[in-house]
Length: 89
Image (cartoon, one colour):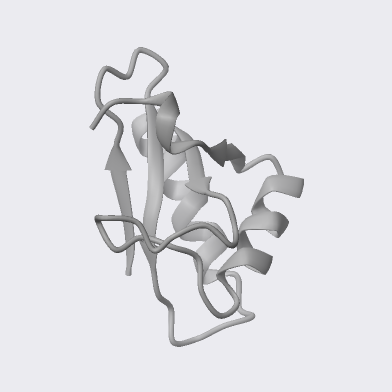
């Protein structure tokens, strides 16, 4: 399960990956989920930085999520760390 949250007042079509869970790890399913979302919605995907949170909405990176995000950033699938003050909710 991956949940991409559209950011308010979003001219760049950015979405924050705020929830992710995949019981089968190491098979590329998470990568394909992110890649498919980007292709379907012409999206830019961001996440919150590791070590921050949990935030009011409950989002934060746990377990192996920071490593996954860093790997996706190296592949240019996740563009940048999302800073909470960058956008209004």
